[in-house]
Picture (cartoon, helix red, strand yellow):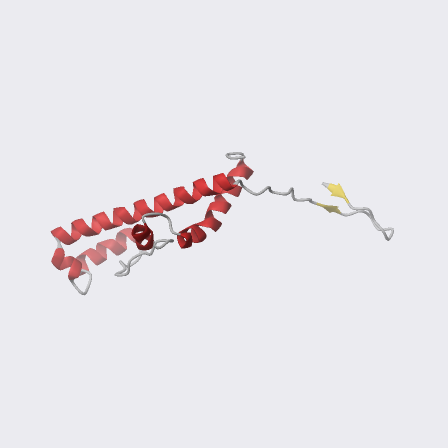
Length: 129
């Protein structure tokens, strides 16, 4: 902590100087983008695998317009919210990445802020330098 010098005869006030946080390296950010994309792809693959299995075994239930009431009741008791018929969207467009067979520029742009934040957190914690 530093003291400011009074200019008008009043007592000095204390203030904190926040240390400058250096920017994370491009290599670290790229590593994190790759890791975040991998997690998105793996999550999508897991959900697709489950959906395919359920569709094969219980096609009528999957295609039914409503959620079975007995299952809805137990779902709500366990998870404390109603089951949604909507699909949880990924942070990136996984299908576009599949078509391109790589992480698209748009996906990189979407993942970049999160990758930078994680990199800065790691640097602050001494995990990365």
